[in-house]
Length: 137
Ligand SMILES: [Zn+2]
Image (tube, rainbow, N blue to C red; front, top):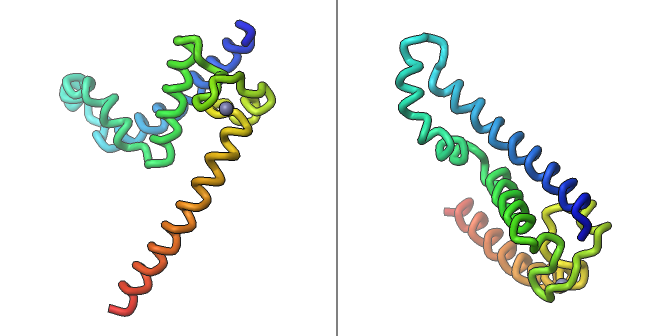
C-alpha cells in the first residue's frame, strides 16, 4: 500500500479514536462534578485512572470499535495494514475505503459471514427460547 494511502487511513483512525475517547471523557467529567474548584486536586490524583475510566464508560459497541481502531493503528505501525488476516493477500482498497477497519479480504469475509450466519442463527434460536421461558415462569 502506498504511504500516502496509509497516512490517510491513520488520520481517519486517530480522528475517530479521539472522538470516542472524548465522548467518554465528557461523561467522566460530568460525573466528577467539576464545578467546585477544590475538587480539582482530587481529579488530578485520579487522572491516571481517567483513561481506564473513560474506556469503561464507553458502551460495548463503542468499546469494540475503539479496539478495532487501535488494532488498525497498530497494524499500520507494524506494516500489516491492508493485509488479510486469513490469507495474507492485499485487501481491496475499495473495501478498505468503505470499511477502514476491515481485516479480512472480501472472499475471506464472505466465508466468515457464512459461518457466523450459521452460529448467529443458532444463538438467536436459543435466546428466543430463554426469553420465552422467562415470560412464562
Ligand atoms: Zn483473505
